Length: 364
Image 1 (cartoon, helix red, strand yellow):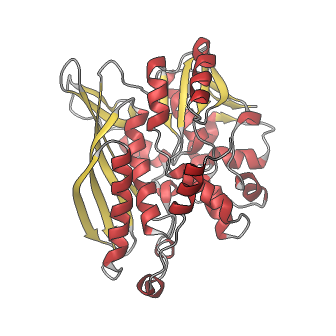
Image 2 (tube, rainbow, N blue to C red; image 1 turned 120 degrees about the horizontal axis):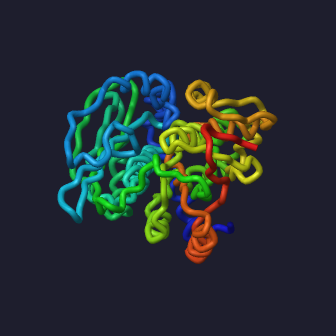
């Protein structure tokens, strides 16, 4: 899909590098982290074990909690309104603080969109070394504020602590109609599966660090990581999808496994249809893997049948995504109309498979 002048300008803007003496003296943001973006997520397998015996107190109005867990919690206020509440933060994955703020905000806001909701209010969660110049944190906050406003919400405060490793994110509150919640546990046999963003953000970032891919590929990855899922959710809403989740730290295969397991179905993915960012597969072919790759294989691998799948496509499926697209499951008879609506609005959409009776995830 060709880029519009507006998208080209936006790509240039988000890739602008902060060039202050203070930041050079203190080192790059990514140089202060052990791993950034959604690749820093706690192991999904360990998280399942940790939460297996923990169930919140029963409450009639808690529509979505930990049984089963989803992209956000949902609490009913009345017959017409429910609150969507989520929190997400991580270490830097780029050195430009403003871009980092925008990416972190996008990733958190997208959880509300993944539940079918609309964001209202956000609070910052920040941890930064005290030695970093204050203008660095100011740039992070300014980038986040820009993205929160673009989502139609307000950044109204937050909490900051001192920490040797920088981290930033948001707690976000939104609203949704109690009957309009999109669970990840509702996929049904016969559904078509769609994805609203290409894959490979982690691979592109790793490839750029190793000089396998260039600045143009990195700019494109950043553009996708700062693209809110709100426009896609607005188009999707009238179609009443059966299941939706956003593809983030557990990778496509991990999130597909969650959807399949919680829906009691088998998900079949078309390997040839998986959309990849430029540079992602080349990075994978060079043997580069991201920090989230082994953890995602441990979590989803036993449930994914990828016999004969090329190594580069397997790496793409297990790659931890940051601010990824929506994974959508909806009746196949609505698929063509959905594609038409996305195309009319110049929004990315790729049909990547379907849902059938059975269990697990099959990639063929």
